[in-house]
Image 1: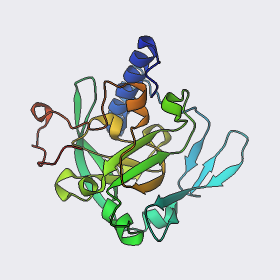
Image 2: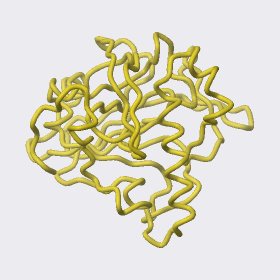
Image 3: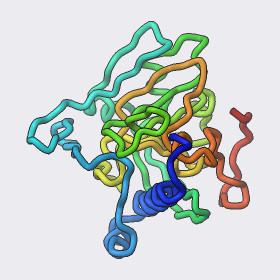
Image 4: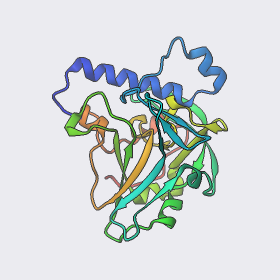
Length: 243
């Protein structure tokens, strides 16, 4: 995000992201209790909804756009997967903690989805591809660094590390992700700070290098590499190399 954003905007974005982080992992009864105190905010313009039954985005004018998860970049076999095809992949359930950049954490979020390895199996990267860059649906309110949508990067080796528990989440608490939690798909990264947990995911690009994410462009104090400090973790993070 552009370093030219003012301090007020940065604080506002940070607060909004941390509030969203809280809401994203609370069980339904807790969300209902907390809603008046923690309104959901997001950096995207509120101009779409996802219908999991139809697998479509619904736009304000009533038109629909079929969801497609695109995989491109450094691969010989680029392609797209529908929502139904993602839901048909081997699914796993995962209970993991969520850590906000403000310093608080919420424990035991019940996610459901599939592992990144399933995408590798279907669309393998070329040997020189060492990073996966994820892209979100929806235009953002500001365009830091020229980005008009949310972006995040992860080393492919980390995404495949079973100890790090990265998950491509389609569900929360046994139900399709609601809009405020990032429907139809988000990346869950239990050992990274919450701004890495990209929502509304519609695509992934295999790359030989990382790309600074939308949040990092807007708030340069938050780097691409965002591990949660060990003192905040209930379970020690597996050892991994720096980016």
